[in-house]
Image (cartoon, rainbow, N blue to C red):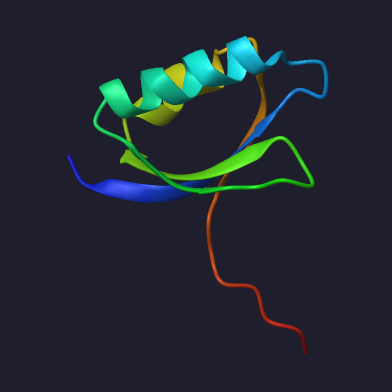
Length: 73
């Protein structure tokens, strides 16, 4: 299974412990934390694509989107 890049946003009310557990679960599933954002509760990760389905069921996760280059017109 190939790893893909995603941005994982956590619920505003997610505790530090919940976020730490989710990040630990991501790494245990073969993922890699690429960047941790400080202005919002979010991380950039590279994970096997089949991990995204189980991650979307995580109660501390608000949303997941594919990480891609953005361009301004």
